[in-house]
Length: 226
Length: 185
Image 1 (tube, chains in turn orange, green):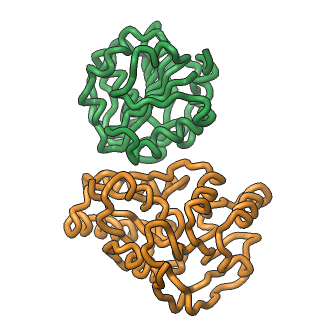
Image 2 (cartoon, rainbow over the protein chains, first blue to last red):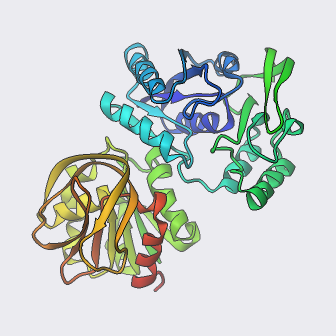
Image 3 (cartoon, each protein chain N blue to C red):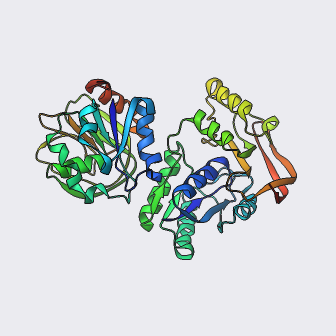
C-alpha cells in the first residue's frame, strides 16, 4: 500500500514513518508549514529542516504553507493529502499521533472524506517505552522547543538519551508534562535516524522566545556522510 | 489467559499497533495475553482462553465483515467475548444481525439503556466506525448514541459488543470485562 506520512521532522512522525516503511511503501512525506506557532495541529519550530530530512531519506516531500488558523488549517491539510493522492498515488496516510484525540479525530475525518486509509502506529503507546525505543534505535533527536513550566532555554539542544528520558519521565511525575511532548510541551528535531542515508549537521541556530516558551531555530544546516 | 484477536486485514499490519496493542496495554501487557490474527485462530486457542477480546480495525478495513464464516465459532462459544468496533460488527453478523451505515469519528456521548457489568449512566467515548448494527434481534441493546446502537449483549450468554473504542478513553470497561469474566484459567 502506498502511504503518505504526515511529517513534522520531530521524533514521533519520524518513528511513525519508520514503522510505516517497515510494513508498507512510503511514497511521500506531507508537511504543513504553519505560520501560527500555537497551532493545535502542526507545531514545529524547524519546519524548514524537513526538506533536508526528506533529502537525507531520499523521499519526496509535499510541503504546504498554512496560516494555522484553527479549523482553517484542516482545509489546507485536506488539500495537501488530496494532492498527495493525485501526485504520488497514495492510498493512505500515517500520523505520529500518540494520545491526542483532537489531532487524530481531525485526520481521521479528512481521510474518511477522501476515502483513504488512516494509520496511527504510535497510538496509545506507553511514553517510557516510546522514548526508550527512539534512543535504542539510534535516533539523534534534539529538543528544539519547550512550551511549559518548568522547561526553559537550558533544555534546548539537548539530545534525547537515557538520562534525558529519565528527566522527562520525572517531569511527568512532578509537573504532569507529557514526556513525549504530545501536549505541545516539547518539540523535537531529528538530525539522524535509521532511515537517514546522511545525517544533518547544524551549522547555526538561534534561541527565540523567553521563559517557559522558547525555541531553538536552526538557521543553517547541511547533510554530511554517516 | 485472555485471547486478543487481531481483526486487521493482514497479520502484523500497521493497524495492529493502533488497534490491538492498546488493548494489550489496557489488559496488562503482552505477558497477560495471547494475540492471534483472526485467520490463524484454532479451536485450541479458544478453549484455552478465559475470555476473548476482538479488536477494532482502521475505518477502511472491512476484512472480517467480508468473511463472516471465519467467525461461525462464535455461535457455539461458551467463553466470555467482547468485540470492539469491527469486533462488535462481526459478532452481530455471526448471529444474523444486519450492518447499518453509520459514520462516527471522535468523542461521542454514550447513553446506557440497560444495566450491565461493564458501564453505566452517560459517558463520553472515542468512536471510529463506518457501520453499526440494525436492530439485532438476539441481543439486548446496552447503550446507544444519538446516531446508532453503541453496545450489545447476546441474550443468555456473556458475549458483548461495543462500537466505541474503550481502549482510547475508557480502559476501565476493558478492566471490568476481564475482571468480571476472568483473566486466567
